[in-house]
Length: 292
Image (tube, rainbow, N blue to C red; front, top):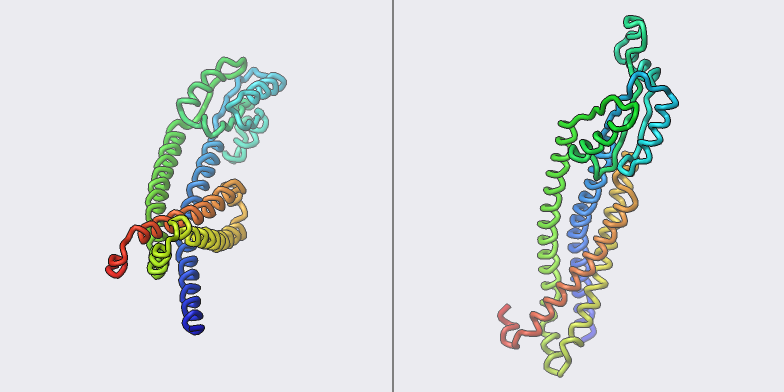
């Protein structure tokens, strides 16, 4: 009797280990999709906020007027950062690019001062930039506004397509994850279907029968999520060691969202699947248990 009980416990322990490993593998894939989506969102914002809009100043604008204009432009809510380029600095950069000093041929500095603007990500589209350009042109000393409309359209369209692909991938993987975890948990509960029926015969309520399975599913979900987070964390650490600049798009918020998603998915999916599987066997009659 003791050997049979020990063998049963060993078999149940093996089932739990198998369930946790298979669930953890699915959660790793789910976590990678969440991480990719969050990283894609940060990358989209990073790219948009690094698109430059150049405010070309009039040649007769003095340095004091230019500095005052910079303060006025920086106070606008849609501006994230500005960089003032003086005429002298523009001449140095032009000389470096051309390999010769243009002022020697022109007799004077041919460049004008300018202000390079970076906008918040929500305003980095041609419609918003057009409205902002009209507003900036009303400022004294502004001669023209220069920006790459084709580049901005191309960037926005590409990022929009990438975001759509990631959302579709996330939806498909969520369905696949639920199916895989559900089948795994159903198989683990299948071996105990006669115990469920025996408890029904002695008058146990459905809630009383479900409780140990739900409790076990929560523990298995937590353990599986912990394993998945350890694997994902190791991968993130290796990626950071290889490319430290990845922290620009993979910040602590992305890591927190990914960790919370994996943890909640592990607990909720395993709990819900266990609830469905137990209810299925609770509704079955004794004769049906031998036919499945």
